[in-house]
Length: 110
Image 1 (cartoon, rainbow, N blue to C red):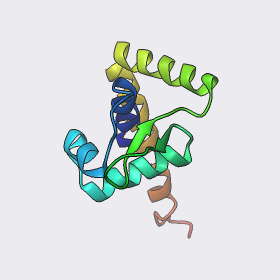
Image 2: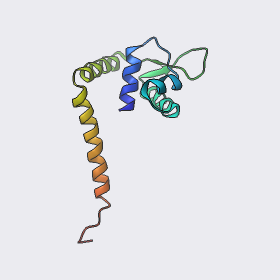
Image 3: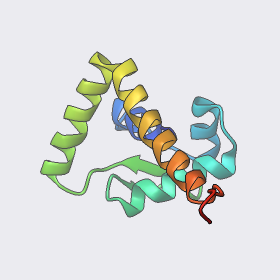
Image 4: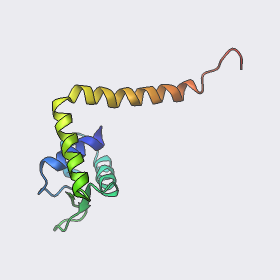
């Protein structure tokens, strides 16, 4: 969820230059976590470092028109179906976590 929220924040203000501290304040997370999200967005081709007076500033910059269109579609879907998207993301994570936990459950036949 934080990755998605960071992406959508940056998309909503494409001219904004984002630092880890600034993103942390908007997402109510640590600066370290926010900096990690910015780095991940760069690796995913959705943001880039931007020339700024301060170091470690990032700008929204999808690597292709196709990616930009997909992000725009995601933003629209997220805005119209916030609860459904959130439930889908969390249910997938919960299911994976449960499957992982179940792998360590002792069974009578073990």
